[in-house]
Length: 318
Image (tube, rainbow, N blue to C red):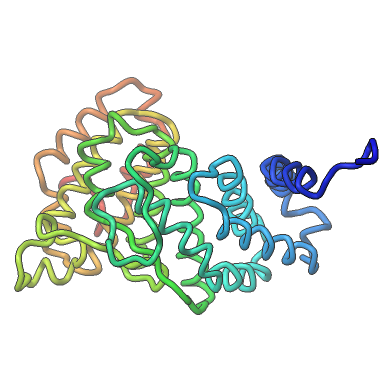
């Protein structure tokens, strides 16, 4: 071999090894370029070409290749979050039409819980190969953006992603002490988006369990709140209240937002259940604890917002 020249296999290996670095640089570039800059005033074809190629790469990567998959999903999320409004229609349609990407999201989400739908065509990871928290967190945030933008633009969905609502509530209620705070925040963000959409979205197919919605045939209230159910609503409300008491900045803000969305969902679907959840003794105890704490907590923006939610959804007791 001529000195100074690499074989095709060596060049291919170098290209594969440099992929994570390239994707990370794309994320940094996308995130560091403010939306007000001139480059965002007119999103040209190069941006969409990058979005197209990165989404294809994300769909073709092995689920265990987190070094490349994480920055790829991060880039997609940054594109959806930072792109101007007139570009998000094309961007979300492009991503939702990518079956490989949706399968990849399904694989990551399914591997985090044994309760995930077994009907998905995407392969599941073995328990020993569960994704790291950062990858699962990014998948939740990307899926949240897809749900929101699909709803805004009425974009067509080629393939839905299955997600266990029961497993998510149990994670927040029972497993929160063993779960990273940022991962809890991503769960809350996804739940908030789904609750704002009344738990109905063509992007996500929610699965549940009789433990949340009760045995069939469903009671009237459980049917109105399906797939959450009355018991699920109470469990989620208790879980969110417990997270409020942890007083971690980002977790506190996200929990209040999710609680507001939960109460709004209950008020729209079942006012009686909303009143029942609001009037629980635990709610009075929560408010007592928050308002009796140090002044910095009482004046925290999230706590103030909690106390000024519109009366029909307020958790303050009369």
